[in-house]
Image 1 (cartoon, rainbow, N blue to C red):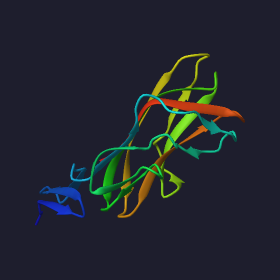
Image 2 (cartoon, rainbow, N blue to C red):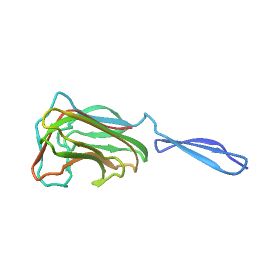
Image 3 (spheres, rainbow, N blue to C red):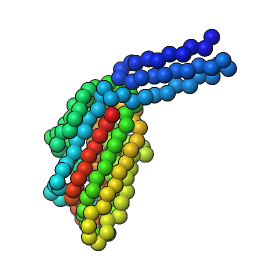
Image 4 (cartoon, rainbow, N blue to C red):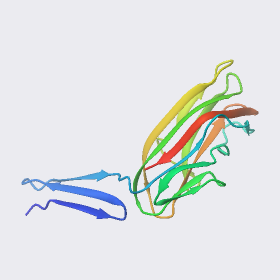
Length: 168
């Protein structure tokens, strides 16, 4: 017989709806019991991206915002989760940098690039640009996430103006 249930386990709600034709659907719903934010406001100092194509951890996102059920690493610029589950990664930033450089941002989980979390922007000759990225990431308890950037030149620089990195 089909079974319908709503389960809360390790910080994730699972809703299972079974039908009479024995096909079941499972929906994952992120919850707000676990959330965290790191940000920078009002500008920062330039960060050098010295090797073309190499990702560098953003060292400029060092202010802790609201958080619960996570460790906000202001010295490491990481967010560590306390419970396994599906999390929504979010990143928004306005920034300046080396004119005409293409800068790519990506989320990293435990030092490995997370698939489908990239944001890419080519800088104009002058002025700030804005990028954003959102992705669902499955994390285990104690996994950590950070944001990294890479340029396409050998001596690109990046200066965050406003930036926030969130997990929920």
